[in-house]
Image 1 (cartoon, rainbow, N blue to C red):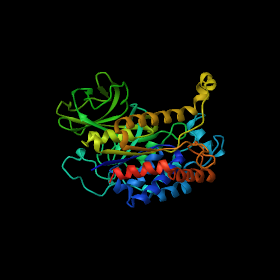
Image 2: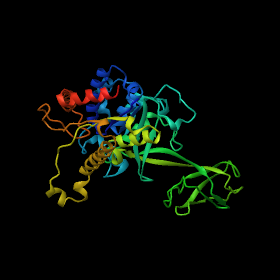
Image 3: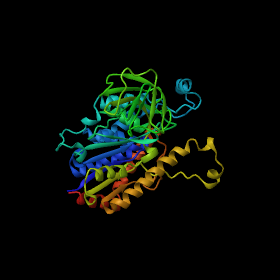
Image 4: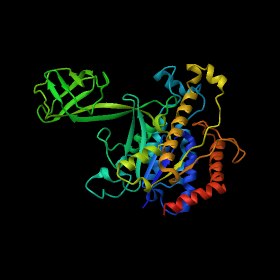
Length: 407
């Protein structure tokens, strides 16, 4: 029995490409995608598409979402728009291009208050949820700028740090592309066992960071054991020894039988900086959950390969100002290509990658590689290119062979 993974890249408005491709595949398999695929993963715009599919929304309806709601997310094109003045007052001259309010509004309307754990209707089949990934499960990738680590949101295993996070918030976290949107502030709870305590400090276990000052000003609560119920503010955090110096002395000093929780935050940005193509992350989760490598198959769908070159003459001379905007695209493309290489080497012929170049070869029409080109012409051109690409004999044959393997 194959373990089927659907992986969806980031790419802003170009996510309409993946949505259109999936709408055509959905018709071909005559089955809802969240019943066909065991694990659905996405980054950035791919996280929105993945979350929608995992909740049973048809791909063609997501195409309509891109067409009808993109102007709320990207309300203007120029960084010199008068609509951006509020952002400049709030963030300064280096403000992101857009507020995230439009993105949040659209996602809240779409997903409402549904938590990530509610994306599939079936209960865990055994007593250990970690050992099984239910069909239609969801995996979303974001990145935390504080601890400098990926944030992995999983529908089948509530993480102790973020809990049953609302779907809209997981997607905002994953889609907050640097320079385009501000980082998203996400509540984080760290739980662990006390290593030892003193009258004015607590030594934490290995669940915590060894970076200096990372928990300074955060609240720490003793949740069980000796000293239970006490809450203090961390005045200073010494990372090497994991020592948290508190603002006032304990009434009862916690000991090694005590547990704690620290209330802090994630500073979440676009998961594309670490895995714009999240296929390798999904494969890793499947292997971690005990699925055999030979049973894993991957359908990986991109949002179009950029074709705008950066000539050596420019790259050789550019500095901070010139690289500021292009660097984001380079980083996202680079992470996607590396993940694609890793997945293809591990999964080999059991992976199908659907991706085409954003040039005029398919339709003779311009395909913008900007993540925020929401012009009607560009969206329609991207949709047409996706349809034309799937009709290419080689692509059609590869897709049919992939679907045959997954019966």
